[in-house]
Length: 127
Image (tube, rainbow, N blue to C red; front, side, top):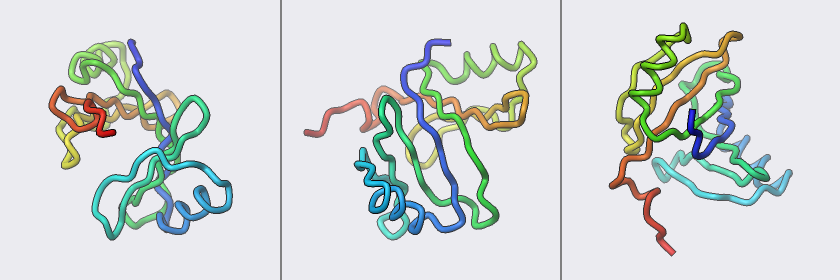
């Protein structure tokens, strides 16, 4: 697999409280914010990777997920499914414009495969 980027995803019960903790208490620098202005997701710099803290479904924290940016989500999902990796959700374009598929490692940790389409804003330097 040709991994282009990765991040750890946290889906806490209270995203705003967790974001304040990582930003204000730990002092992590913000890489980017996304989503609705009243409940944004925040991605923090985390050394050589990133930590994303955003809202879950309102239930219990969903634990940890491994976010892997790849060149072709559909091809990687098919390859991994053929190798026996459980596919939790087939590839689809999310409201924020990224193509995602969810798989699981042997312990049930969610693997989020992500493809950034050519026309997505992440592909453009906005500075």
